[in-house]
Image (cartoon, rainbow, N blue to C red; front, side, top):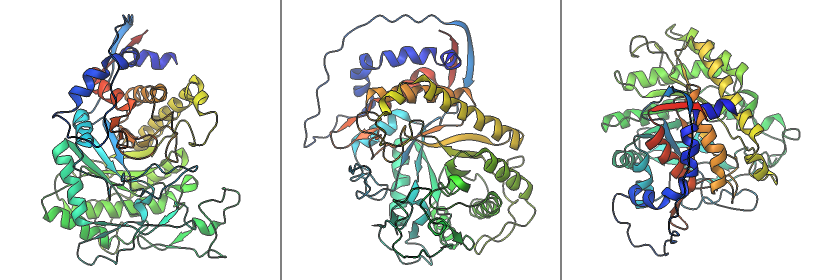
Length: 464
């Protein structure tokens, strides 16, 4: 832990003072008086005062951060998403959330400028409607034969524009995860009702994750061209979600295939936006160093050789990017340092410095592998982290104790050259930063606000 204390000496003091600053932050986070709500907002206790002294030695600048180091995620999960007998996703989906909610707007504005990542496990089955040649829309429905537990789903173009409008008002840029499985076919299971969602890794047959065929980008092509025609552009586009290799969930795509089709995405994006293209990210999955090395090698070697092409984008992946700009901007991956949200020992794990150090080692490894595999041209980024996967853990990832892992993670990301760490989620789950049920903010939102105000863009560190 000494290495992290070197970086986050100031943040330690800030974390201690979070409760003392809550009252003032609540007022400053909200730019306008809140609208009347049906439920009475809980009253904060009177502020107390405490003297805190932190002595820093060997003071130095540890890192300089991007303006958009702050990042939050908005997922697709519907209200029917349940884990361990609890269903905490009511009106939290990017498809249904109230985008005019003053609580949501004030949270985003307090963190601005930031990235709003719109994506998640259901990204690889959504189709885009309201554009030329759009396929029929199949509503999201619970399906235990799918690894992600749902089938169907569509994003109307009008809703897409509303999400972009939200960021225009709040000061964020949208990072958008696109469907990397469109056009592929999953192997049929026997029996057809094989419960792929519930079966453990050892019990699960290969048919649950085996996909054949190539990526069809025609629906995405029409969607992005309509976006450009409307004078809009997302800040970034991510290819797929948790499909990489053996650690994938819905599919286990090999790195060479993933790289080839990623370059097809790049060709499509370059054709739609010949200048000032969105950032390109991949693979938005758990970090596998062997897979990542092979993927980056294939992407960098395949760039511009004319091999990349698909039914919509054609060849010419090397055209349109700024001179000297790599074919991929960010190597994105997911980290959940506390494991699954059902663990009985989660509180103990969240306070165990060895668990925190293990997460830091993974972040250091990712930075080394990405830098070495790309000669420093590609930057690592965490595109999803919420402490515990499967919706988090009530009483932990939504409480003050969550700050132990989260503040530690922010320091590690800053120190080890990551572009951002995207917090799951702004709405929904037991890790929501904006709690719509009781009309309040989670403690980790204040950590993010304090980080932006005290630690960004220049991160100072020393021995505490």
